[in-house]
View 1 (cartoon, rainbow, N blue to C red):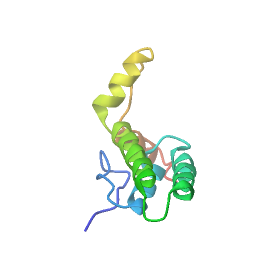
View 2 (cartoon, rainbow, N blue to C red; view 1 turned 90 degrees about the vertical axis):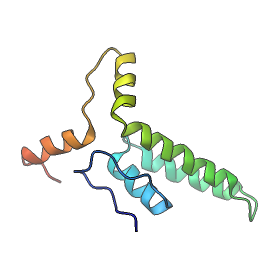
View 3 (cartoon, helix red, strand yellow; view 1 turned 30 degrees about the horizontal axis):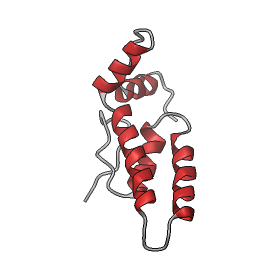
View 4 (cartoon, helix red, strand yellow; view 1 turned 45 degrees about the vertical axis):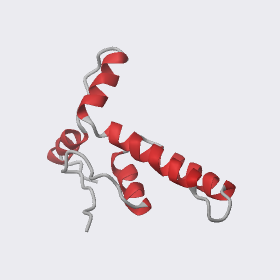
Length: 105
């Protein structure tokens, strides 16, 4: 049984189903990731011949990879360095700060 990701874990488990991917994108993705995923998934599904869901699988793999990069501390630090050396805070630390400040939504 796969566990659902939560705000306290350092990174979500690799999503194995579309439901898990949607949940992880909502919790850990960048703003708009979930909406873009839904649009890309619908477009791929509509364009796919019956019985051939390779395009759907490709969309899921792309967003799963995007999520993996977003939750990887080293990947995000590398990206931050490329855009001016900004400091990157892991999501679990940012959420912990918000909760400690009483901003749990």
